[in-house]
Length: 262
View (tube, rainbow, N blue to C red):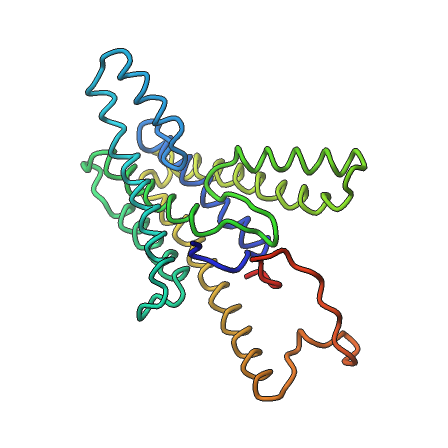
């Protein structure tokens, strides 16, 4: 099941990647050198400490992993219950939840344990990575970069070697995503420093998510209005060629992928 059934516009995907990199840098700089987006390191730390008999240290990572799992479950629940009132567009719910959690984190007193903040960030990271999976027709991640790098290198090799020239678009698209993630991490590192915003830096990430939400809402309403006009016998502007003559022939789209990204 998918929370979001439409692929993202590349600009939206890049903005979400900026948030992903930002939050990873935020927890690392402002909250004790911990990465909350990807749980690979946390699982490894649990195994290392357990193997050394350091059970207390191993248990310290379990709440973060649990918060991430809870976020995954929450996203899947939203996808499965989209017919309920108010859940017809779970993407809106996910973004609003992310924004609310990040604003709440920024308002926490400095006396609150780091673990609480890290768990909150892990939760919203899980919501985001489960919800946003496609940019156009390319699978990507907004909160981790390993898979993006692998796909980028594969696409670039196939393009540059002449094996598949169409992979140029995929390579360039993922290059933007990877750079956006790195840029977000750099901004997050600077903003999260003690002499900058520190623990309140999540307000910047919340602001970017608010822009993403506004863009998605605008696109959804516009396409909905065009669909209504078409149903009444009119022709949506996107269905005509630039000259206003016959409609262009639609390009084939992979199964399960919408023709227009959000």
